[in-house]
Length: 211
Image 1 (tube, one colour):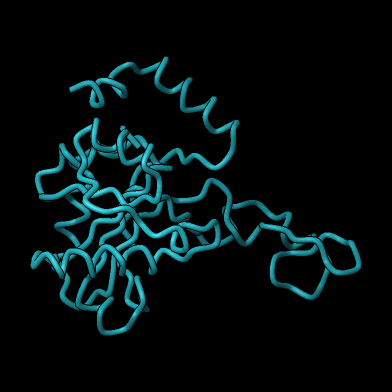
Image 2 (cartoon, one colour):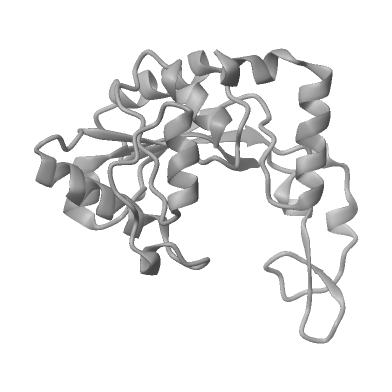
């Protein structure tokens, strides 16, 4: 969370850094790193299966009551800690310049095409993802023979408040692809080990938190 707050504070185009959490402990930590925590999110909006739209609408309603509802929301997930603020600013600029987009999401090119991804069929056999046929030979072809696919990485998402209010959705069907360098995300305990290795290898990654 500290890394994400630091990235936001260093972005020229982010004018307010707000953390939404239901935890008083996390709120105190966020405040200590320079973020605002003007409210606590209701517990029912912070369940493991709570959709993002719920906490975004909760925050927007609070800001509207304050008379300071923004035109855009820059959604920065703490599970993607290492960001270049210049890249984030470029994403914001890119979205603002496109009046037809409903949202912008950051992605990076996958090292292996998703068309080579497998699942296990109801009968227990491996099968290409989304296919009834369990023959795998086509999926074993070289990656160069498949379309390039992209992974949403949480580096920076930019949301239109007007679109959210009109449709009750975060992203819609006109989402700009903002291609970033590969971004490390935290989803498992092993991922924490990789992030610690990254910081040990490049101490400048931690310097932004201490600034």
